[in-house]
Image (tube, rainbow, N blue to C red; front, top):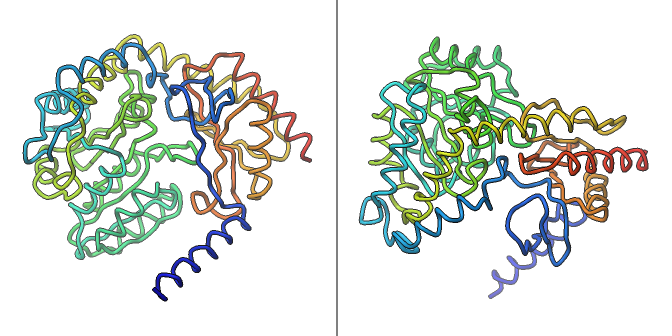
Length: 398
C-alpha cells in the first residue's frame, strides 16, 4: 500500500508541474459529426483543427458505404487477420491500394492495419534488430520515434531535412541493414521531406527508406497518391505508410512496399499478427473513399483545398507571430511561449474558432504554436474570418 500511495503522490506532483508549465491538456467533447461547423461542449464553433482534409469524414457517400458494410459484414471482425478476422473485403481493399500505388512500387503489395501508429510499429520493429542502424528524422512523429526505440536497433537522429549530415552518417555506418525513417509531410510544420534526394542517398549507401505519409496521402499529387506522386518517386527501397483516417475520412492505415516486404510483415509484424482485425465495414467504406480520392471528385476537392491554402497565406498578415512555410493543409503559426499560445487559442475559441494549440514535447521548446489545418470543406468566408481574427489577435497581443 505504501508503494501505491507513493506512486499516486508522484503522479499528482507531476500533473501539477504540467499545469504550472502550461502543458496540461484537456479533452473537448464534440457533439456533432466532423465538419467545419461543429458543436463542442454544447457550443457552436468553426473548426480549423481536424485532419479531414477532403471533407470525407461526414460525406453522405461514405456514410452510406459504411452503413452498407455493416449490413453485409456486421459490426466486428471477431479475430486477428491470421485466425478468422481477415474478410474478403479486407483483401479487396489491399488489392485496390496496391493497384493505386502500382506505378511507384515495382512488384508491390499493400497491407491494411487498424491505425497509423500500429503500422509504424509493425514496419520498423519487424525490419530492424540489434544489427540494424536506423537514421531517424529529427521532427518525426511520436509513433515513428516509439517504433525505432522499440526496434532495439542503433538509432541516430539527423537534423531536419539535412541531407549532407545524413549522407555522412550513412557513409560511416558499417551495419548490415540501414533504415532511413522520415515523415512525408511533417505533422507539426507542414513541410515535406525531400523524397527523391533521400532515395538517392539510400541507393548510394545500400539503405532502405521508410516514409510515413499520413498527411500527404489523398492530398498531394494529381490523383491523391501523396508524396510519391508529388515527387514521382519509384524504388524497391521505398516503404510507404499512410493513414486512412485523415484525407480518406474513415480509419485505419496501410503499408505499401515490395511484395516480399509485405509478406514478411504478415509473418512477423507483431502489431499486425496479435491485433483483432478492423471491422470489415470500415474496409468496405474505404473502397468508396479510395474511388473518390482517385477520381474527378477527389481532384476537384484537392483543387479547392489548394485555393483555400493560397487564400489563407495571402490574407494572414503577421508581424510577430510566424507562419511557417508550407504548401500543405497544415499551416502552423509559431508564437513561442506556452502561456501566450494557450491564451491565443482561448481567445480564438471566444471568437468562435477552434484551432489546435501545440506545445512541447510535441514540438521543440520555445516553438509552441497554433496548428491551423484547412479542408476543402471550408468556405472562402470561413478562411477569411479566421485570418482576419488572427491578424487582430496578434496586433492586440503586441
